[in-house]
Length: 230
Image (cartoon, rainbow, N blue to C red):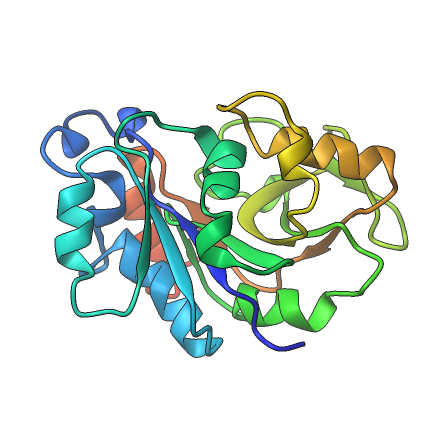
């Protein structure tokens, strides 16, 4: 498929990072010598994605300044942070297409480029395609699994030893977003509708992944990027 536009989430407060986000937004915390956000944008560059939209809230001026040399569009949530679903819907006038790629800015990856893999696995009957990590390989992630997957890749909610964690990268159709009444809502609301319609799918990332949502995740991520086994 032709590369869809990319929505990069960068509006969160990063409260789990403690003092590291007292004077800067989490996407600008350095990991292995570059801000977290730049690791995400490297994936977009390698996938030849031409349109990138970044949402802003906490210390958004710093992110604007950091990205000033790039042809990036900004979805400004300065007045009210909208969570993932509301943020994606607010950015639709900038994205202007469906489906779109959605990427979190607080993880690092090795192995295959997840954005290229999403495009390779995408099929027309899908409502969304999520990049997944087996729960026992989800470095830096302290929760339970999010989904279980059948032999066709179709997802249902579930946890346990055979479950998977959503890794923060997906392709999704956006047509269902205007039907959600709330202004502030999680993308989970859209996923629940897609599950009911049998249109939520996943694939398993071939490589390492690390959630950098807490301070201890930085050293873990740097070790993974350096080729160390977690």
